[in-house]
Image 1 (cartoon, one colour):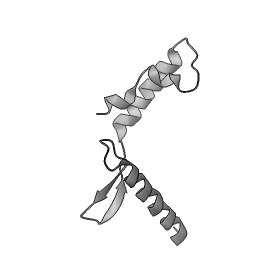
Image 2 (tube, rainbow, N blue to C red):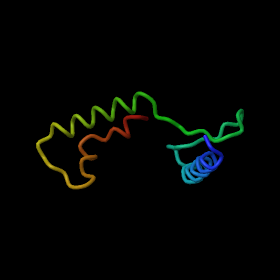
Image 3 (cartoon, rainbow, N blue to C red):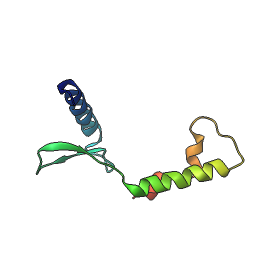
Image 4 (cartoon, one colour):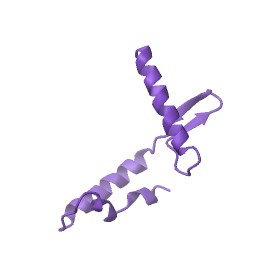
Length: 80
């Protein structure tokens, strides 16, 4: 990994941290033991729920405009 790539990655992590640090669903957190920012990953449950929601959307007989397919099964609130 080059130095320029690492600088860009750190910049993106800091920007995400500043945008989400006071919300209950954060994308990046600061680890005091390692003294650095670490990206927060959802894990296997999010992947499973995303697959279930995609299956429900595919099996409906309606066609959706733009982002309306998200209203069929909202897996985001089942993560918490």
